[in-house]
Length: 215
Length: 151
Figure (cartoon, chains in turn purple, cyan):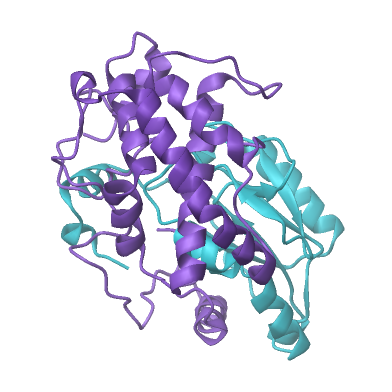
């Protein structure tokens, strides 16, 4: 999940995957289903990071969102010099799907954490689909920075750091908490289906409505 | 890779309930020689060029990636798969550099000018119109080998 060619920055391994796939075409008949020879170990069957089941906030536990947003802005400001250094050296970034400026990420997300639904600043894209893209952009600024700065290729470590240890993670968990209790059906549903927060690779149960589609 | 039985409960429950498609009119085609193949990639990772319209959550349409496009973003609805590999190296999900190298080494004939991405969370049975458009474009380009890369 997210690594079909197996190993990032490992051209030989990636070409081995391609060659193995192409070799299937040489079979005299099909369809063919075959296992790749090498298994990349993961933790407890998880193919990506998942939040601890117990880490779910209720709205009445959230505290002052404006203060939390200030802490996130400060945290983000501290990361940005390394983010831009990474961009300059790596030559690409995955940040930008939302098309918002980085400085606008936290204010936009914070409005949802306060129970508001801001008007989408992006023409043709409603507020909630834009929220998802901004959440992923914010996450990507953090993880791209850590990947570059600390030379990490470990989705469990990066996920734990972002979601459990940063103020940004806490802000997004606040958005999840508010969304789960929202009167807006779309917002409630995407939170229940864990489309804002990573909960798919957990033992569950997931927070939110029981008709989530996963359970 | 993880066996379904070893997955945690939420993912296992979802994946175990997926029904495999019932494919009729199945053809097994003899491939052209490896070093003359023209290869295109189809990815389900909802990757697109920066500035393209984002994929909607159950998108049936596709986006086109040029063989030299590298400024790409992802708008896939699902968050259950790892994005850090894509951040580290886009070839982990869209191996255009690898295919280029294989073409230069004469392992394959050439790399197509156009590659295609879909939003893999949507039902592929609803994508027929888009699939026909893609296949038509591939025929125009004389693509004879497609590398399907799920995400």
